[in-house]
Length: 88
Image (cartoon, rainbow, N blue to C red; front, side, top):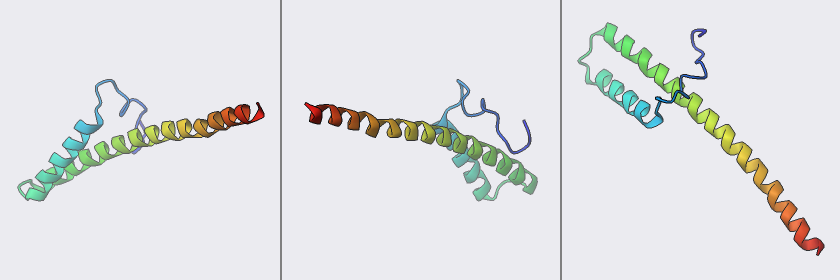
């Protein structure tokens, strides 16, 4: 993996779960906001949260592309049906 880039398997692994990852991010943020962590731990936890956020962003981006593709194919299919019914 090249630093900031995620591999395709990070957010598409069979064990990965969007909702669970969001819960982990929220738990990390609560720890950071509590003020009970040492400064080094704050940085470590922040890095973990950023990794999780990137996984979520990649997941949502992939799903958005899938939805866009599905939406693009709907009007074509509908317009073909309309043309067929108006030709009769």
